[in-house]
Image (tube, rainbow, N blue to C red):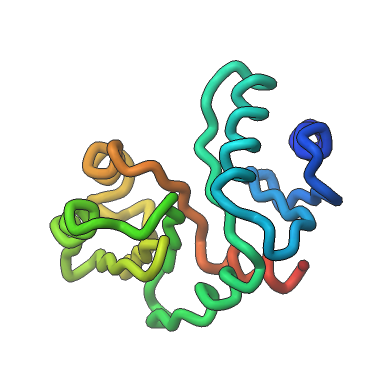
Length: 153
């Protein structure tokens, strides 16, 4: 995580801080964060690491909106971050994955996966989900992680 902070600083991003070892980086930027900054980070990471790293930026205000999404107490709740709002084709992918055990819905530039029971025990976990969504650049975080980021920053 030290190296990741160094890379972000080297790209000119202000006050980068990391949160748990999952690639979450918080930096100062105000309202000027946009797709250009996302592209800057992707290019900087690819140059430094030698491979592409899709990047998904959200402001703390955007995370606060996401974090208030309710979920049943017995459900594992994961949030998938997308580059743009999903079109009908992407929404159909998530619709086709939905079962009684695993529910998906899209809001804004995110999708939500509610899994009754442990997500790792879902029949969709791993290969099935990865195969279905391989054409959809995304990253996922547990809703608890989203809320912990907000609480810390």
